[in-house]
Length: 344
Image 1 (tube, rainbow, N blue to C red):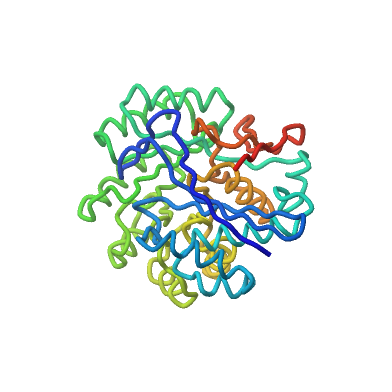
Image 2 (image 1 turned 30 degrees about the vertical axis):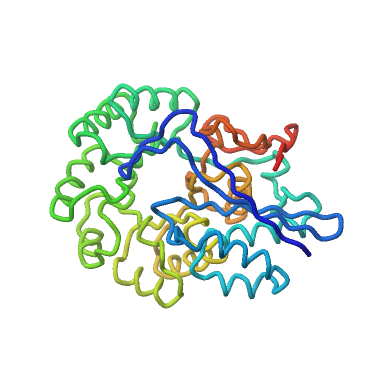
């Protein structure tokens, strides 16, 4: 078996804003396996500035992985503990190599086109007019779960946007989630949660920056609004650490991005611990290309979680790869009439 890697830069159709800044491009890496006449493809979806493996030796570790591919998947995953995005890429590449079709990783009713995955419609940060336009577009496209990123513009303006949605759409019409990406100061967080709760939101992701365990634990204890941990899970590699974090903070939800928390294996470990503690969860992609999104989506369907998932739509980029993944009526679907065009 031979392995190679390649860098690829995805270009956003328009700049996309979060509380950490505005993105115009997204770097990603692909690992390709060759064995006889079979190929396997996996995406190492790194997010610069957020991924724990955003390190100077990242490419060196990719090269090491390819040079040592014959160690086998289990040994490689163990050696790559501190590189969750490469773990995800390697897991996917091996699964791809084993499959009759390199992009059909977890055959199911979803991949046959018989079933779909409910997803949230993501509203990016921007000025008030831009955010309202996105919300209108998502509702017209059939989404009944909308996730709005907050924390970068004036908080009162964000509250006004939520208020305007709730004036027109009740809880039974539209489920609203917000994602603060750690934007609130610990001293103001509870007050802001109280204000947000007036609009009957489903949840808020990561209201304060991670690693403030006591503050976050207290927030989760007294919050009027369910809290979902997201960035908090990044960089926690070992099962004992995961158990300690969830037992300490006791969040209402956790959100799992396989590229950021150790692929399918790392995510499943979080899920098992969370379920033992009666903590709910959902899966989210992390701006991967359609290659990574395809792997995450097929795996997510196999988990049988009926909540709307945070799966990207592949439509953000000008140079994504054509795939059977399509969005219709607020769901992610696998259109078997569409073929893959992966031309790396």
